Length: 171
View 1: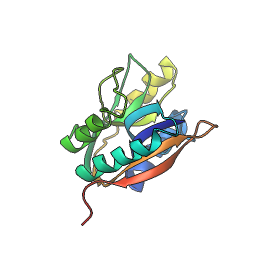
View 2: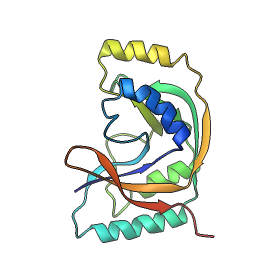
View 3: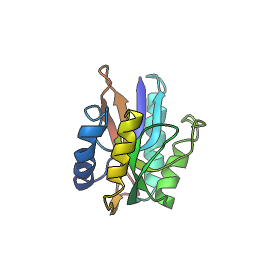
C-alpha cells in the first residue's frame, strides 16, 4: 500500500490555501492542504508495525513544528507548482531528516523545500498568470503544529489519515 507522512496546518491556513487550490490545484479533492514530510512510499503489511513504532518514537522525540509562511513561490522550471513557502526551521528539518532514515526510504530525488501547495498541473501560460497575481498578495502566517500524520492512498487516488502522532513527550 502507498503511504505518506504530512503535517496538517490550522483550519485558518487550510481555508486560505483552499481559496486558491479550488481553482488552481488538480489535487484539491484528493487531499487537504498539508506540508509533505515524506513523499509517497510503498509499505507492505508485514513492515507496517515497525513503521508505526518508529513513527511513534520519532514523534515523541520531536518538538512541535514551527511554521512561518512568508511568500508565494514556484518550483519553475522543474514544475508549474505554486506554493506558500515556509521558512526552514530546526523542528521541521528534524522531522524531515528523521523520516528519511531507516526504516524509511531516503529521498534522493530532490531537497527539502517546506511548502503548502496552492497550484499544480497548470499550463505554462496559466502558471505565469497565476504566479504573477499571487505574488502581489502579502502572505504572512505563523503557527505551531503539534501532530504528524501517516496517510495512505485510497483506490480513487485520495489520501486519508491512517494514524496521528503527537509531537513531543506527553505532559
